[in-house]
Image (tube, rainbow over all chains, first blue to last red; front, top):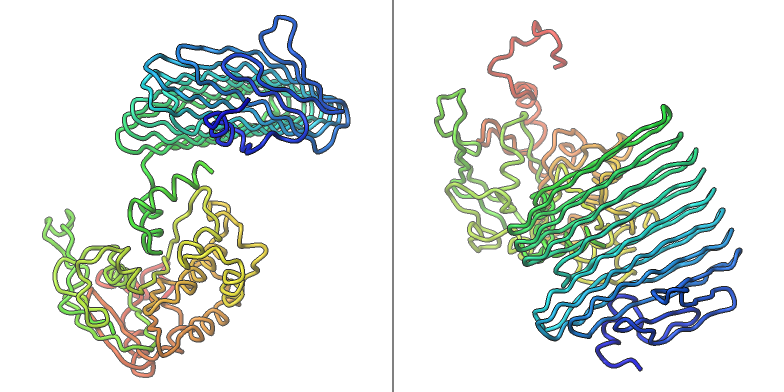
Length: 306
Length: 251
């Protein structure tokens, strides 16, 4: 059963107040807590027992799957391998996320390795939120990996967010795009205190007419540090864009390395990157509307990470 | 309602003048009356925008004082001046990521009331449906962002509204309606200060203030201002300029 703490974690990472309608799979402290399948969406444990396989029937429309993970057991490092098979022409929203509650000085962590096979003309929206809390001082680690394969004309829209409280994160996103497919990734990471986060993104534009847009928004507070690598490799006539912005607050540091590789003469690849403090004209504008300096900073960061 | 007393804004000089400090605003005394429409004009680099920013508190004054409704506001922050009822419309409005027009309106009005937003947006004559949830980011055109800037200033229902070059980036056929709008928003409770070169604003001003080299060169009506305005070349190089012989000068 869900206790009060579980409910708070679920609310934060998956916006769930009550058990969702439709398919879901809730994992707590490395074990299945509750599962429900629907007519079009099947969830089963994989052969190795290390994760789940979510299968969406071709042509499924407007359905969603929630697969949150919650951790509150001291000393546990939970690794899970999940596969998503999205049938031809299906349209589905997958809401993942991991919430850690750390009540002791022992470390806790989770690594979710998610691979997506998105069928022809299918469309998947993947929302992943990472969050940690608790009075304990144990290190909280979250190392998510997503691997996406887009078939012809498929679309994947991925929103990857690390909200707060995560001490250590090593994030990896990989994607291969088939002909005419579209990949949109937005990653938002907020670090504070002594936290560290690294994000590595390797996107291969394999098919003709494929398009990819990777947006990264980072905020470093306190003494925290973030490292961002993004590489787009074009192997056909395609379009790719990387946009990475980092806002430094306090003594935070950032390294951003966008890389573009055109292996085809008709490839169009662009990137824009910026690292800096909050722009002065933005602060002045909001203060001239009546916000204090601190309120203006919060408002700008809130919008930036929205 | 607003009084400037012996106002100075001084910057460290550049190499050109051997590093001697330079007064961008060079001792301005002026009293703005409640409910009037003022237009500040003058050559480029004469100190118009600097003066407007001193009133809002964006630039700190070097010496002198500013009284607003009888109170000395010289030491107040931008935020405190905004709360006291001064609103400022920037010549180059800031662009954000992830902040919408609706967000700005909600900050300035302190409410999320959709009806109130629509009423304000309607007053400014911009389409609420296409604008309200637009992000104030780099994709907005120069004209769009200026309209949003004006609307935000008007939504604040300020006692003193300062508009710095409100017509920058606005298409010619919108300037007329914009002038009427600012004039209409002017009630006996609002004082309006517009920094502009545009004759459309000069035409409707109650008082024109010409600033040159950081000093007030003229205050009064348009008729007597016109000869002065033609005299003062609207040019930052008038001390060096050779006038008509200077090829490329459009004056």
